[in-house]
Every structure is written in C-alpha cells, then in structure tokens.
Image 1 (spheres, rainbow, N blue to C red):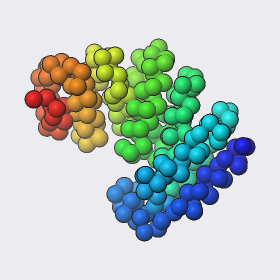
Image 2: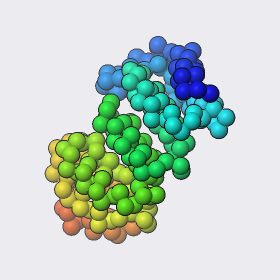
Image 3: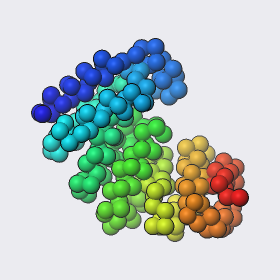
Image 4: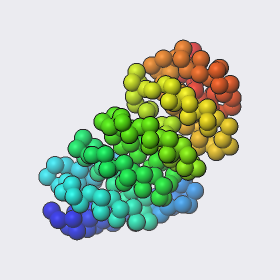
Length: 224
C-alpha cells in the first residue's frame, strides 16, 4: 500500500466513525485546545488494529512523512494514531527517530500525547541507545520547554531496576521549585512509579530534597 493510499484509508475510516456528539465533551476535556472526530478510545483502538497489522503497515521510509501529516490534522485522534503507529516500528527504529519524537513533543503539546511519547517511544529508544541519554536529556533540561523537561523526568518510567536514580534525582532537584503543575506532577509520578521497585530510596530522595506539596504526595502515595 502506497503512502497516499494508507493515509487516505486511515482518514476515511476515522471520518466514517466520527461522532460529533462525542466530539464536544472530548474537546472540552482537553481545554478546547484540539478538535476531535469524537471516536471513543475503545473504538479508536479497534479500528486502528487493521492499520497496525503487518499486512497494512506502511513502508518504513514513509513513516516520518506520515506522522508529520497526521500531526498537521486538527483532530486529536490523528495524533494518537501516529504514536501507536510509531510504537509498531520501535524495535527497528534507529537513533534518528529521536528527532521525530522531539518534533512531536514540542508541537501540539499536552500531557495526553507527551506522556505516551516520553514513555513508549523515547523511553524505549533510549534503552536501545543509552549513549544518547546524557546529551539529549541535558538538552531538554536546558531548553526551557516544559514538555521536553517533563520527558526528561518521565522517559525512565518503565525502567524499574534499570532506572538511573542519580540522573533522575538530579533532574528533580533542578525542577522541584517549578510552578508548572505538569512538572510537579511528573516529579511525583516518576518517584511513585520507582517506589514499586525501591520504596526506601524514594523516601530517601523525598526527604533529601525536601519535596513538598503535590510532588511529595504523589511520590509517597503507594508507600505504606
């Protein structure tokens, strides 16, 4: 299937399943930042399965253009679809994929899409290419972009015992006084997730840094 045929078929399928009644509350939930086809998550996942199957996947050389074109669409479901599509290629993606992920993070940014990219795409890619971690994460931390900084905190969310605790703690220390809700929430989430692996270490980090408020509550939520 050619690039154009694949793209057109996806859009046609979404349009056929669009529900304007659902679209309104979905848009409202996202603070009126994005339009929606109005396709609820279970239905969207079901109709996307065909396009994610081996028989329908586009050629790898068309992937970047496809994602960028889905990113240009006003409907949020198109961006969700693009992230899911990239997840199917993560095992064969090379280091250059990080540039596309960064483009996605800083364009049409909001927690719903940034978190999926940070954990399922960036996190998996950096497992394969750990040599990218020092330079890229420092670049994100220095960018002044809240969503890239959130990515630096969250990309290790599924690393468990492989988590670089020193790196994470350093990022938290640099951002812990941020007034941004999404940064404070990310700090708590990252520590809460790591508490499933090493609760004593999370308590130590929280106390050492003197975390307070939202970040502290989220970090310690699972610790008895």
